[in-house]
Image (cartoon, rainbow, N blue to C red; front, side, top):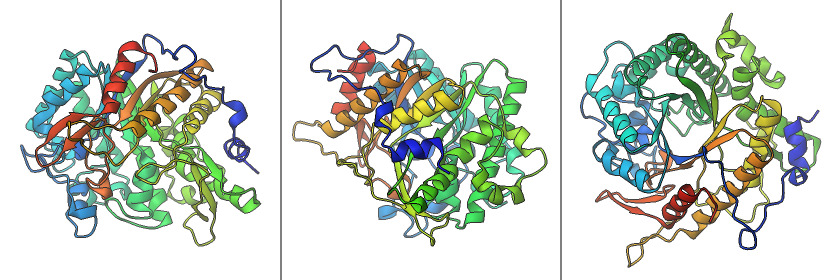
Length: 467
């Protein structure tokens, strides 16, 4: 049987998407007055200062220093040196009229051993950053975990050790005790499906573990830790707005064959619904229960099923899959019919963002949503006049924002849009070979050059209209 998502995908779903008027011939779409504009980043990707002020090693320090693990042998040791240059980066956001900034806290910077001893210099850095954001009238969205697990906890089993739920809740409480008086918006995790798949299933990300059972255990214990942290903060800081960030992508079968449709059902469950369903509905999809039930502890679903105040949605493209009996989940990547691709090789499919937002409206209670990541990598070049003319990225952002506007017009409860990313940065296993930023970073000098997309998005944020 097809799920509603895969049925719509197989039909193209175009009939459900409102037509988008050409802004050259009609008034530009406008966004609500309270709509937030901003950018997202992640600690390991931009901070640098990997061995400064008491920070402990993370699994990404270990992985990036493993020969052959990352393109060109790149590491996050320096990254964008945001740890020292944060004031200038905050000013870039202020000048872009951004009203929100999602950043992540480095768990090993706060707790070098993952538990126990708190590093006061680590917390002091985030004190300074938050105060700087508030002075610039930028609303901080704090994400507690964006992939940089303390290596000390990985040595104790990491996301395969059930104790991690308590470790994470304790860490959340420590950070909230320090910053909760100034930060109102808290996201627990970023993209647990990516952590589970590429860090623990297929390999290629830290800690580079593999296997179907490994994948499901890491995914379930992230869900459990997320629930434990939500419960902890809800009980101790009821004034905070709590949520999490999921990478959600509509799934399409490559063909109309029953096997490909079944593969799409499975992949939708693995990638999307095994994260959002336990959180918002209190159950895992039926198709994966055979994998989950052996690791499901008594009371786990009650811990995971927590009320949230907002959901962060990261969207880059739809996903096309086909049946493959040799694949870990009986699936394999299929061929997209898209005509444009980013430098990551990802198809450009802005209508998928509308489909995903509409899915949340229709089937998950229309909870408040922020688009917390959306962006594209392209081959950016600095011209002789010291400019970066990234017209492809401008088109990407414009077309996706049209879909956000269409979703709002249809009643989707979308509250803001945060571009990925503010800065070019360490792009995980791709190192510094891929550039997602609206600000170009010249890594040898750390000079920042705002791109054409930065200036375009700044005008949109200022006027609340799509130029």
